[in-house]
Amino acid sequence: MNGGETLVADLVIRNGILVLEDGSEASGLAIVIRGNRIAAICLQDDAPPSRQVVDAGGAAVVPGFIDPHVHTRAPGYEHKEDFESCSAAAVAGGITTFLAMFNVIPPNTTEQNCRSFIEYGEAHSLVNFNMYGLITPTNFDEIAGMARLGISSFKVLMGYKFETAQQDLSCPSDGPLLDAMQMVSQTGLPLSVHAENDDIIRHRQQRLRVEGRKDPAAHLLSRPNLAEEEAINRCIIFSRRVGNRLHFLHVSSKEGIERIREAKREGLPVTAETCPHYLLMTNGDHVARYGSVAKINPPIREQADQDALWQGINEGYVDVIGTDHAPQTDDEKLLQRTHEDIWSALPGFAGIETCIPLLLTEVNKGRLTLAKLVEVCSRNPARIFGLYPQRGSLRAGAEADIAILDPRREWLVDRRHLHSKATATPFEGWNVKGSVTHTIVNGTLVYENGEVLGRPGHGRFVRAAWGRQAM
Image (cartoon, rainbow, N blue to C red; front, side, top):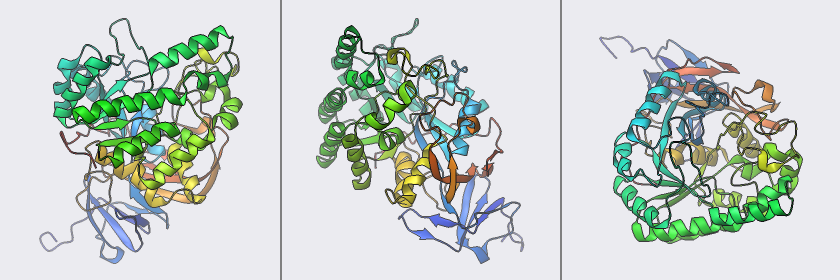
C-alpha cells in the first residue's frame, strides 16, 4: 500500500504453472513484476492491478534460460551473425542471458577489448549477456583486469592452434597453463576449457588426408574420444595441484564424462557442460545424413557416448546444457556440397533458438523432467558463472527474466523461420513438441507467440559476482 492506494504493478503473469527452485510445480499463483524485478509471488486473487497482464494459459512459467556458450560473431563477423539477430534468436528460444565467446574483433583477450565488447553489446542486444575472457600465451597480465570487470569465466582453447595476423589465441603450453590456472584461482572465477589434445588431432588429420579420406566420418576419426579424455584428465591433474575451479565445455565422450565424474567424487571443484547435438544425434545416424552441416568440434559421436551424457545429466555430474551456438554461412558449411570435402567445411551451426524446444521434446518423451531442464539450463549456469540468485530462480527480489513454455505445441524446425542470420542447422525438418510462448527480460515482454517485441539496447551486461564460489 502507498498512501492508502494499492501499488500498481508493471506486469503480472497469471494462470501459469510455476516451476519452483525445489523442482515442484505450483498453480494458482501470480508473479508480480515492478521495474526489472520480481516484486512478489502471491495467490492470484492477491495480485495487484497491473499495467500489463500476461495470461500463461496453463503453460509452464520458469526462470529465464541462461545459455553459457554463444558465439555472437559480432563485432567483426557480421556476415555470419550480428548481436541483433543472435539476441532475437535467443528470446525466441526463451534465453534471457547468454555468455559470449571470445572470437570477435577485437578478441576478448584484454581488459580494454572486453570493455569495448560490453559497450557494443549493450548498444545492440535484446537480452542480457556476460562473456569469457580468453587466456593466450601472452596475456597473463590482463587476467586480473578482466576479472574486475565482472566477466563470468576465463577460457583456454585446447585442441586448436589459432593465430590471427595480430595475435596468437592458442592455449598456453603446459608449463604456462599451470601458471595461468594459479592466477585464475586467485580471482575465484572458473576456468572453462575446450578440452581436446591438439597433437593427437593434427596427427590423425594428416594421416587421414594422406589416405584420401574427406568424407564426413573422417572428421570423427580425426578427433577421437581419447583426444578429449586426455585433455580433460590433464586439466584435472593440474587443477588438483593448483586448486582452481574447472568448467569443461561441450563434453561429448563417454570417457570424458567418466573422468569428470571421478573428479567430482573426489571433491574437486569441477563442472561440465554438454550440448543438444551430442544428446540428440549420433555419428552413424546423423552425420552421414547431414554431412558437413553437422560438422562441429568436438564431433558428434556414437550411441554409447550419448547414453553416457544422458546418464550424467540425470545423475548430476553433467551440470549444464549449452548450445555452442556458432552460426556459419551456407557457403562455409558447404550446404550445397555436403559430401565433397569435410575438411573444407567450417565447424559449428546455429542452435540458440532450437535448444529449449528440442529439450522440451525430450521432456515429453519422459527422458528429461521439466525440473531438470530448469536446473541444467537456468539455475546451474547461474550458480556456476556468478549470476545466482538474481538469475536462475523464481523468487521475490530476483531479476524478472522469465520464460513461458507450451509443452504441447507441435511444429517442424524450418530454417526459414529462425531468427539467426546464418541458419544452417542439422535439426532442419525435425519434429518438435514444445515451444516458447513468452520471454520477459528485465521485466519487459520481449517475445510473444512468435513475435519479437524487444529492441536492440534493451539487454545489458550483467556482472558476475567476482570470486563467487561454485555450486
